[in-house]
Length: 143
Ligand code: SF4
Ligand code: SF4
Image (cartoon, rainbow, N blue to C red; front, side, top):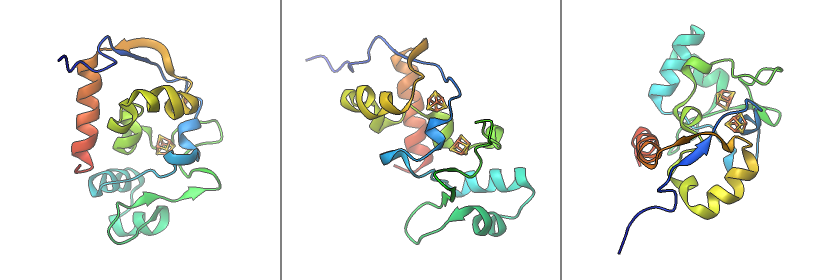
């Protein structure tokens, strides 16, 4: 039996920079950080890790730290809809929407597409590249 994924011919995606994935939308509420993410962003902001965690994150034992929101949006989303820490943004921001859990067809054609107008637009990412990004994200968060 073939084990080809439903997206064997690739997936189209191009970010329209609408900023929707940087605001609260149901299941995609938290921007999780590994300590490598935290250290990279802290250095970019000129902060030490503890200062950065205190000022910008929620930290709960047993969970990754996550960015504290401002209202219903990420605290680093600018009024113009851009990411203020784009060059050092957390891994999950850089690899959206190609997360493993998003690659189930019902997720991709459901909540992911509903959230992200870039899905189905622009260039086609080959299935191998989609897999590589999903695996990289899983490894980063230790899954
Ligand atoms: S929701 Fe999609 S199109 Fe909009 S900013 Fe996020 S990745 Fe880009
Ligand atoms: S860190 Fe940047 S890319 Fe990630 S949710 Fe916040 S504003 Fe969006």
